[in-house]
Image (tube, rainbow, N blue to C red; front, side, top):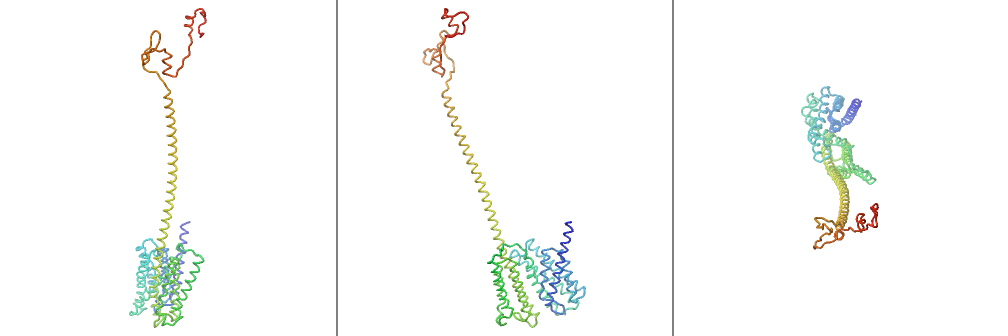
Length: 416
């Protein structure tokens, strides 16, 4: 069951990429240069690069099918259309491979230097390969004059580069997690940025002022990119770049603005160069800001983790100190108890009197010689050297012997 579900999921992804690539390609052909319908504006290349980077090479058949169908719809022979489709498919595959080789598994727009690599590899290098493979069959089939092959290649390459640096970042960042909170103040600021963007684009590209005055003004877009990059997320900044590019194309097609040539196509080529430079600047700037925000976020996380560890360690130390204090108190109590018992034992020992050694006793009168050489009665000697006390009486034998008249022969055992 999971395998079947995954199959349907992959099929849906290929279908979405195919339809999206085809529709955007047909829109791009509105600016095509006859006779080979090479266009200086080709956002479909950005869709292809973003699709392969996000979904993998599995969507490449859909890209080839859509690109081939578009080429066939322009009146090209089947083999020419298939070759153009192959070039348009090879371009995002090569871009994804180069970017992953250079950056690894990281987000290509997460760090400033990675964004520059993305622009150089996915924008310049892979677009050059796609333009070469796309223009070559047109020239070989005689659809493009030999002297115009390089001009067509240059137009194709600029269009692909513009699509990659404008559209691919827009798709790669649209659902990226962000710390941005849309508070009322932030919403008002976004509205002010949008209003400023429209006003500046109308001034520069919309014909609000004379053409002679707008020549030095195209780069008024850059402060708006800086504003967006520092105050909003990468996706909002890529939206600003895309909207500015769209308004610039619209004004240039109408023949107003600083980029004018003998034909609309020449003007669009000039505009595309400006858009590419501005987009790359904005792309690198947003990546640097995102990298800075990521560093700050990582530092805050490390700080929070360190504070948590300090709190846990402090709690452990408090528990250990409490246990130590309890142990010390218990040891002190036991020591006091031991001292008390020792004192009681010493008092008890002090009150204990014992008789040891040889006692010199008279064999006749039973007196004992003391340490001074005098002879004491047995009871006197023992009383001086112990706590024993004596009571006097007469045993039955002595009583009969001493008082024979008072005792009968059978009255033994009575004491007097």
